[in-house]
Amino acid sequence: MGSRVRIFGAAVVSAVAVLAFTPTPAYAATYSAPLRTAVANLTVATEVRTGYNRDLFPHWIDADGDGCNTRYEVLIAEATTRPTVSGTCTLSGGRWSSYYDSATWTNPADLDIDHMVALAEAWDSGARSWPTSRRQAFANDLADSRALVAVTDNVNQAKGDKDPAEWLPPTASTHCRYITEFVATKIRWRLTVNSAEKTRLTSVAAGCTNSTLTVTYAW
Image (cartoon, rainbow, N blue to C red):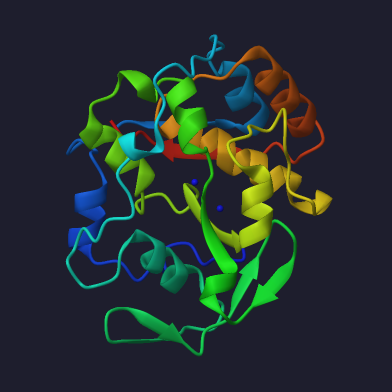
């Protein structure tokens, strides 16, 4: 530092921006499985934090040059009341719902953009071996609406770089949604989990509707 309050496919992102943020091949492979199967299929590996630095994941970038960087693209896409965009991407008149804590905001400064899989967690689980270009694509992924989410700033700060074994949203009714989006992001970017993480994901998923999870691999 994902039914959904945010509207899938309604992101105000040009085709150019999507292409710029997405290192997906022309014929991208997809993964599809029931949630509990998807969790069971996650690869377990030891996490390695050595060498991590947040600056190794360049963000937020303005891929399409429209004056709005990734943070603002997400805010525009997820607004429940669309804001007016003026000047150098100043937002006004918008309204947002933070699903982590069921809070509603009208000031974009009250929201952080959470990386569903925190940057440090991504590093630990495979991104340390990626080139910088792939880490930048991960940190600014607008092509899958589950990867980035606008949430209350202090709730995001409480999450920090924790995985689901260490942190879940304070609103218990959102846990199924949260782990579904987390698992989708791990799969999309071919990231591993540690044993505690997989145990917690398995436990939460057991109480969720076993809906089919479909993901397009990022690479």
